Length: 141
Image (cartoon, rainbow, N blue to C red):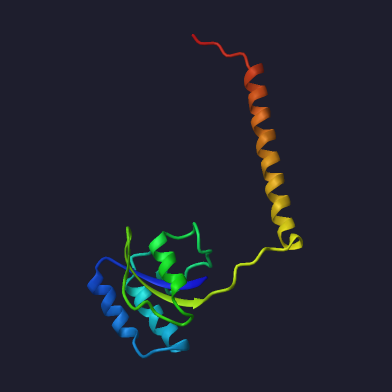
């Protein structure tokens, strides 16, 4: 799922932004959406990204009201009403949605190997620290 969003404090402000987007589509919509995202969004990163968020899955990456609203939308659509979360009111632009897929082993293997190496290094470091602590002679005066 690839979306852009604008986070504002009030529902009225979000509705105003949604009104500005009416009748726009395609690249014109993305450009117009990026302007208030950079100028008005409470999210600091939106100023550089035009409100673009990294791709995310349906479960676990975003707060539930936001994810539910984004996944219910069509590609190229702006949310018809503001989406309320604990952060404020979101205006969402759905840019793309890819079907979730199982990653083939040849693509996942480097990430798995890296995670295993990192886990082993952490375990070795902890064991070394424990061994040194056991051998250390500590005197309290």
